[in-house]
Amino acid sequence: EARQRAEEAKSAEAWQAAALAGQSLLDYPDASQLPFEAEQLRAEVASCWNMLGNVLSEQEKHVEALAAFGKAIKLQPDFAMWHRNHAGTLIELGDFAAAEAGLARATELEPEHPRLAELRKEMEEKKAGAREEIAGGAQTAV
Image 1 (cartoon, rainbow, N blue to C red):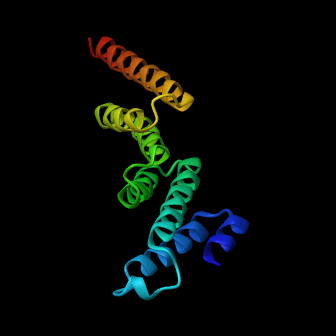
Image 2 (cartoon, rainbow, N blue to C red):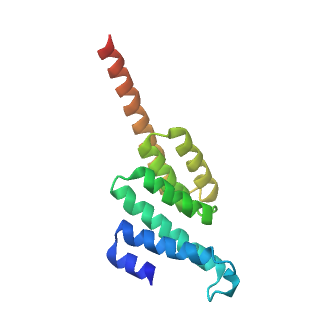
Image 3 (cartoon, rainbow, N blue to C red):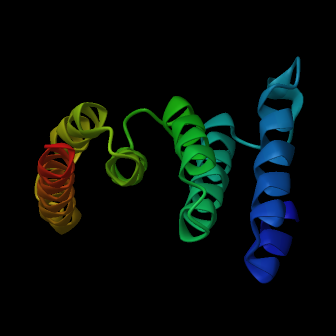
C-alpha cells in the first residue's frame, strides 16, 4: 500500500515512507512469520530506496540520494542498477574514485548495459571541467 501511494504521489516523502515501511517488515524479529517471501520483500524495499534516490537526485539532493542508493545496494548487492545509480550520484558529487569503483562493480554484474558508457563519459566530462576550474583558479591567483 505504501508503495502504491508513493507511485501516485511521486514525492520523496512518499518514497521514504514506503521504504521505511518495507524496511520495518524486513527488520521484524520473526520475518518468516510474515505473509511475504523474504527475497521478494527485499527486492521491493530495495526498489523503494532506489526510487527515493532517483527523486532526491532530481531535486539535486545528492548526499541524501547517495544514502538511499546505498540502502538499496545493501539489500541487493548483486543488482547492477543500484550500483549504476550510486555511481552516477558519486559523479555528481565529484567523488570520481568511488564512482569508478561503483562502475566497476556494475560492469561485473551487467557488462553490456548502455548506461555504463554514458556514466563513464559523464565522469570524464566532469573531471575535465574540474581540471579546467582548478587551472583557471591557479591563473587568477598568479
